[in-house]
Amino acid sequence: MAEPESMLAAGETVTDQNPDRIVNGPGSVTDDVKTKADELKEKANVFFKKEDYNQAITFYTQAIDLNPYVAAYYGNRSFAHLRTESFGYALTDASKALEIDNSYIKAYYRRASANMALGKFKLALKDFEAVVKVKPNDKDARAKYNECNKIVKRRAFEKAIAVEDSKCLSDQIDIESMAIEDDYTGPKMKDGKVNLEFVKDLMEHFRNQKKLHRRYAYQILIAVKDLFRKNPSLVDIEVPKGTKFTVCGDIHGQFYDLLNIFELNGLPSESNPYLFNGDFVDRGSFSVECIFTLFSLKLLYPQHFFMARGNHESATMNQMYGFEGEIKSKYPFPYTYLFTEVFNWLPLAHCINHKVLVMHGGLFENDGIVLDDLRNVDRNRQPPESGIMCDLLWSDPQLPRGRSTSKRGVGTQFGPDVTLAFLKKNNLDYVIRSHEVKNEGYEVLHDGKCITVFSAPNYCDTMGNKGAFITLDDTLTPKFTSYEAVVSFVSLLTQCMGPFGLSLLGYQYTD
Ligand SMILES: [Mn+2]
Image (cartoon, rainbow, N blue to C red; front, top):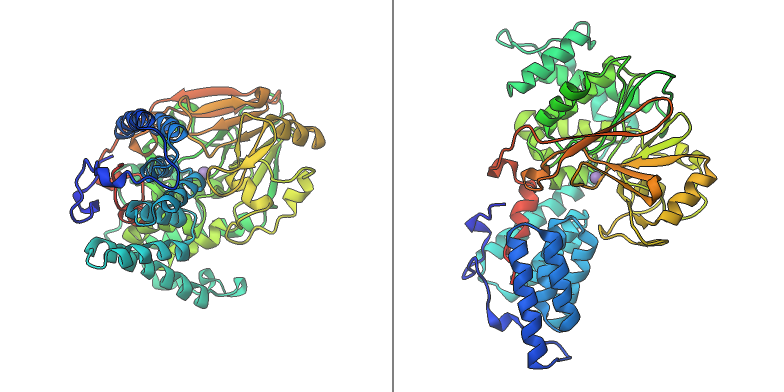
């Protein structure tokens, strides 16, 4: 993606190859090995520039294996991990770089970025503070410190004014004060209800990049919140004989690709039921359009249209990855909080015909979890940092047996044996999850028992992946349909990171 010049610190150039930065730590290796390691790093940098972060990580790792004493290798690999959203690994690498060289400014930025992505703003602030101390005259560093400080203060303020659920913001807004202006040409709700005509008009209206009136936006949010709060945390779905059921993965604000799914697979209806498996918003530029379309469909077909919470249906992620900024640009102030209230009531998992469990992230840090444990999760809250709710939203499968620390820094990585044991204990056939971009839009792991589905093609306008959805009939045999992106907006507006993430990443170039 394009790197705006303003991201550079004073005196830094695009090809920052300052040899002084190659600081050797306590250990050392022969000059010959040093040269070889450096060649590997250069090779990695080339892949990084081509946005092939996985290859870049492979070669940075080889460089580190040869010469583990160079801060820049860890710093660069940390940056590549940030780009692949492996925030846990990014954090570890940045800390390692600082262990070797505590004046390595970029490593502070990388660690701060990882911490911000994990919602740990106070820790991020410490790193920005360190940069300001080392470089007191650096305006850019000062600006980033101030920006992060603002977030920390605002979050403290929001916490202080947070109201109890009994006094939700949604109960305090006066709908009668939201008059429909005479020149409003968009879709209209009748008696505060959504019907098929409204939903079709809404999608057309959004296709033309027009706004839904704030009164209807508000009414949809209130109605859909009431609907979701009546659901248990684990929702059972029945697919009757001879019918089709569709499961979609991450959408991430890609409204035109969402419309394309409906074109390829038919509009949702009572005879064409869907489950959207979380991460509806953030990243893409049309999260507002996606979420109102999906919520309207939920209101229209409450028993045949399902939505699960993803890790991006949370206040921290929405602050970092664009949704909050998008809402504020399209609707007045309280809507951000209203979305948070609704997201808190989204169900966490769905079980199809008692045999296929569907969740956004994956399985658990502990053995012995049963479906009733999922049903009993008290979910009306922001996702916690560990436990069942956290794992449902954040975990990823891994190839090796057992479990390991998550590359993301949140959730659990679970192996094939973990999947098998869980399925056996709960008398299930397989698991469908989303949460990870895949080249074909889907991936089948763990001997067919753990399926990933991801429905945002050319994710972030850069990944070049296909999107996919899964269709099932009552035999529950998964059928995959992959598709290409319909449109690509390569522009600053559709940058992968939201405004905060983008501006705070800082020091955008590898060493
Ligand atoms: Mn996700």
